[in-house]
Image (cartoon, rainbow, N blue to C red):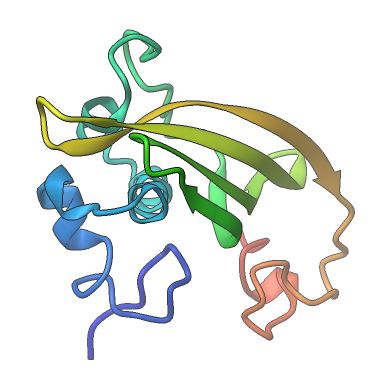
Length: 154
């Protein structure tokens, strides 16, 4: 049995984001690229994050330190391919850092790079909010486990 995809699609990693991480052209929509980028953040695939970022807005190096957040759950709220080579995906992502849990709500913008024949992440409007989760509370990843037995375990 294959591992579940980190993007929350209810598909296996091998049948969902892994092929996109191997070849950007397999992301046929902004949402597919956004899901693959989330998975890349989870597994810390810096090369993919750099390759999928628009060169005009890409930082010199993706900020993926080993002590960075541990991503727990992705929820896509809305996805749009405007049909003019631009797209937008609105999502929430739950993560955990040493200070506790947080939720990121973002509207990400994408553009289709016709020369490279694939979508690229341009930028996003992000809102970060702390989540107050007790160790005995249900884990925010929606696993059904208590936080202390899931994402809050050290």
